[in-house]
Image (tube, rainbow, N blue to C red):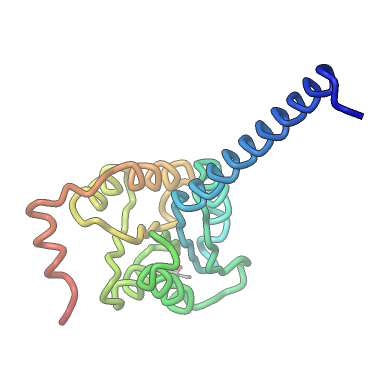
Length: 182
Ligand code: RB5
């Protein structure tokens, strides 16, 4: 039976729906791929002194759309901070994550261990002004926090300041180029 004008109209209508569905799905797919490409990945590690702040920071970072890779430890059982610092440092050095955050009691054990790696510039910060400068002047690729000496509120503010501050470059570039031992 030949298709009448109303049948032709109905076909055109279903074709249009199909085309717009394919179009929408393609747009969603492109947005999904782009969001995966653009999402910043941050690695985080801590010893037993930093567990509580670590989990709170993970939530805060995820709310900002940042993907977080947790290198442990996840309990308050006593551990040795270098075991976790070296895992995080290697992940930053090999590009598995873009940046890192490390927490221990004073921050010093983590900073000392992280900075043994030639590709790491780990900066200890206990205030937002230092969080700002460690990004602006030192281009720290790992931020270290002294969990037993600052409030969570301050820790979170330092992380946000460090993340939101661009590296100034210029004379600071030449200085950070001289940090690694060759
Ligand atoms: C653990 O008790 C403590 O020594 C550690 O968290 C850190 O402060 C080391 O630098």
